[in-house]
Length: 533
Image (cartoon, rainbow, N blue to C red; front, side, top):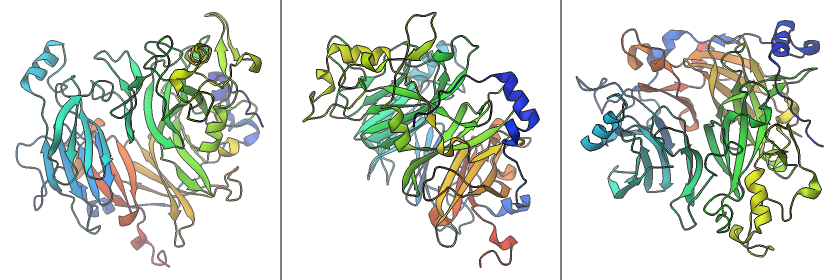
């Protein structure tokens, strides 16, 4: 069945939908949580503030942490900070404090700092902020830092944090500015989505560090990217999928409209011919993600905030994503689920094109699409055994038609969770698909900007996963510890939730803020005498 075309959002109708409670009463109810955890529970939760063993606070005169990235590898947590990388053991799970066992200090050299200052940057920006933190293999960490707006990458021993080999350039692998969003993953080679220049004009999806050619997206082409904000990347099948939001070129007759996208590239792409797409992706395609409340006029949540990895629900590969409304709209957040097989199906559908700069975007007639299908993965045994052998007609079509016509529908064609009455915008999501006494329940944790966690039990239809039953708002609890995580009279930015990760082994959530990481249990059963039964 073909997914209905997603029209652009209409603000007046959206406002009316909210005021009226949605078309025909379809807009979801928002009951309060079944329980709210008392704030004094927070004082019992382990926290990391940059301390070593036996010391509850950092040494006198030490700076506050400025955490950028966290990576959990089994029972070890790696924390990428400003000028430092920490190795923290998560055992025993009952410990009352989190300390680092190893610390790597990686500062920018004076010449890089001087050049950074000469280019007009502030002293606090001309530091080395760890923006890429990946497991390269079972013994090696791959780390990139902004390095005073001259990004660098290096390999380190996972056990000792000792350097392995020389530094390499971080260009197209790591942003120059620590405030810029970027994503990265290893799958045989390094796949990154970031900006390649000091002014952050050239956004790129880039592949490097392996046995295949280095590839990138087409430069300065608004059909490929228009001011993207990269959110997440996952590996699934023969592709890498990138989730991001950007300005929608197909709605160019409106004000700037932000939409959420998923793009994909073939892992085995080797680039185009010397004439077309040389050293560039031949398989890059992108599609819109539709997270909306159905009705006579859909209510859209357009701004993607976070995406989970691929999890198995009812035997289907699912990602959950949290979306919000634009900042100048009525505040609201929603969680939508997407089946990766449906995502892949959209990339086998119709392409969309704009015949002239003044015309609207329309589907490409099927008889005008060359064969083999543009964007497919070349492989030995096929008509073309490598992407570099594709005819120029196919390569030119891919270059000028990266956008798919259909949007990817959310499972059930509606959000699983909607919140429009929340005090803070919801920006982080974690999911436990093996919750409950028998490991057969699905619990979703949503984190607000300020560290408040909303815990939901959801009932996807296990037979088809086509619809979601009602979700139950189980609990609301805090994770931010003002006594440990912020300066006196701390700022809003210091309380911003950077990441939220489920740590099943300890029955906890790892909540990272700029100045600390807090481990919070997923349940506070001591509140309820019969809970454990």
